[in-house]
Length: 398
Figure 1 (cartoon, rainbow, N blue to C red):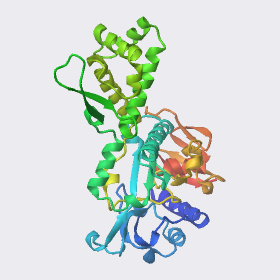
Figure 2: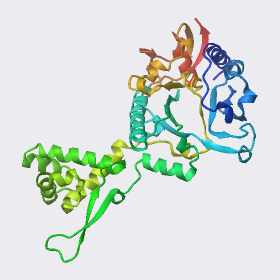
Figure 3: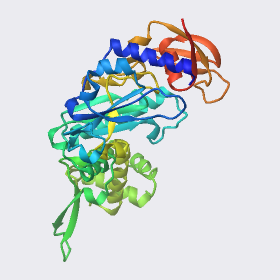
Figure 4: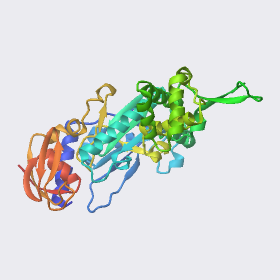
């Protein structure tokens, strides 16, 4: 990024903060604050260990310093401005989750930006379902990070004092790290014709991953019951490791012992037990959330301030009301109004396409723009986006 572009972006960030000062998180005075200024070269310098008392009015501070990135701490402290973490006097921390499109399974770094964000939103919805249904979370804030993903801040009273180990257990649960056997309840029963009692294994149906697996298992069984025998067994044989014998055992359990399946029993036949084990893995894959583990376990984490601008995209770090999440489109709703009324001339140094030297495409604010190498005029929000991402230099404002 050249000096002219950096100065331009600093000035426009300043203009934005003058018009749109961000709000404060709960307990703002007890939190540590940090920011990254605009600097020459590729490196960044984090300024942290600041208190709200030192910053003063946040909106005025941002308009005066217009940093590239702004953060506040998940933790709350007796003295948040002290430079040594051990002397701050930790009181507790929000439980924070970070979903980054770059780290999602099946998402490639060369995928289009919009496609990556769409995949990340699907993962976000899975995370919220786990937090709300399984943990009973009620006080949460959802935030578009302004970059490649989403943050979730949980502030229920019973999470603040969780230590690292407790937060790691939450991470393991959310990421679906459990063994099939740990989901089963065991009951000793006297089987017909048996000289010794046997252990019946059942999925618990009252909550947690066990309930989720049971729901999927029932759905799979009901699908089999709606088919004729040959069609059902053929579908089962499409699964890895399921031959004629196992397919017959699974189908017979689904049709002849359905009430036991509904009650959670998986000890109906060796083949059915293996079927339940496979459905368990499918459930973990489909319903877990690939959160960034270090963010959640770190009691001292700094996280982006909602209402600030992301210096790597020029988009807003946007708080999203839970009721508005389904309709939220980051490529429209996170475009700052400050950058929507003008055009800029840019010199494109790298197109958004995979192949160098070919035209790329940027989709923002509901429109699509073809971006070629060289000079061209674009809406300011497109120019800011490309400049922040290091793909263009600002030549002049139109």
